[in-house]
Amino acid sequence: MSPIRVLLVEDTRDDESLTLRGLRGIADGIEVSVVRDGAAALDHLQSGGPLPALVIVDLKLPKVDGAEVLRRIRENEGLRHLCVVVFTSSSEPRDISRCYALGCNSYVIKPVAYESYIDAVRQISRYWLQLNTPPRD
Image (tube, rainbow, N blue to C red):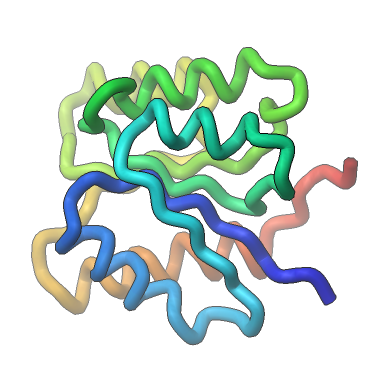
């Protein structure tokens, strides 16, 4: 069985660590790739390697922000079907509206409390990696 691939696009090391902790134990065979800016995320996705089942992207990123990463994913014929969850600290209505207009699958505001953060990551990954049925290529 092939691994379940997740791309985490996160520039804050503490949030990266918490997100990885939340992903542990969700399902056997999860393989997480971490990139720290939007340009690296786009490079990773366009490298020709296996595509992730889930992209978790922060909004406030260096080089290319998360909304622009989302826009470029949705404009790319080979990537547009990817499941993209925006996981960010921004609760700004315009950020939320913009991301949904650009085609995010879900927008989740990062909780501040440790246990709530871990729980949010587990709920995101359980839904998108275990319950959701993505399109078959």
